[in-house]
Length: 331
Length: 174
Image 1 (cartoon, helix red, strand yellow):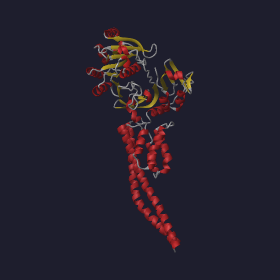
Image 2 (cartoon, helix red, strand yellow):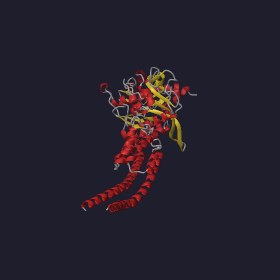
Image 3 (cartoon, chains in turn yellow, brown):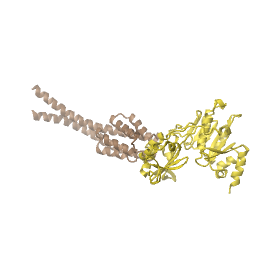
Image 4 (cartoon, chains in turn orange, brown):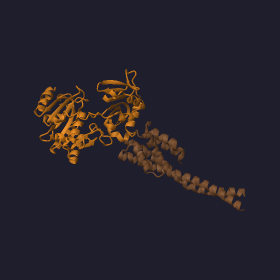
């Protein structure tokens, strides 16, 4: 297992006072950091795998009173630095409330939305920034791979990864893409052509179009592209054997999946939800589950840390899981 | 006699050089205004067509300019934005205006237009950013038109003034 060093990417982008705080974090905190929460006038919060900490002037603070508090101007400065002083260059991402950062990390923003024709044109007067640390854990999906890949048929099952937020879905998805793409000659598993449609730059962490995280040598990434359109583009142009995307759910996504499957591509995707009952609220996903599209459903949690495999449903047990936990618990 | 002739020649050369310097200033201002106009159009193209981030867009613009002073203006702003102390693009632009003001032939009114360009630079959406750059370019165009007319009439005036003032001094001294 190895991790990426986030400080060299994040520290130069934040306001000078936060730079000092983040640079001085003890290695054990820096190594486990998941989120950096900056809110105007509020204490700097550091979310780690073990819980929440306050960020002080030089490292971790003991109390909220000792914690660093940023001004709205400093948050605006952070936004500008993250866009290389060019909001216009990232306005499409900002409309969706986030920015992809070097190293595969992401920053989410909250502030005053400027509307045009009822749609968000730009975010102004930033009052909160949430920096999410991308943590590539190579080997995270090794345990899962035998459930997803069929050795006899040398194909990948249509797979759905289900979990609550921050339980490791994207980490698993990324590592599955990497493992399938690279293959393993010793195990007699050939490398496969993998296509990733990364609508929110979360899977491959692309920055200026280049994947910042290792997604494998035979992987093509379509970054920032709507899922349905992206899947069709990849199928037409890159002939992937495996299509990887996250958060399927819209009706057009479902149509694209159905079409992609006719080309022989296997689909691996994710869904937010604690259980099947929550998935039924998404008609597109419910339709796919109802029609037994997914051959494998993997339920993840963070019971023993992010990426804990709670259950793997295969074949008929997927239907059973859907009928009992999903449809059976509705209403 | 030869000494007087030599002295008269020296005086005449000096006044002609002085007039040529003034003519060069007029021409220099016009050339720099045109170069800034071109630079703003190029910058707008970088922003509008390829959404290139400012540090790289400014460098690209500088590469396509011919006047050293204007080129160094854009390189200087780009350099400041790439430095660790950079706070925002407008501040970097204004700082460059302050530092390079004495090296260019532009007038206070020209600098005022360029300083106003700093407001919101890099902090606006694409359309607004383009509008702002186009407005600045249009203003510089009107300054350039006035500078061209001034150069045309001023050139003649300075040329005559150079020769005639030289002759005047020579006659007075003789």
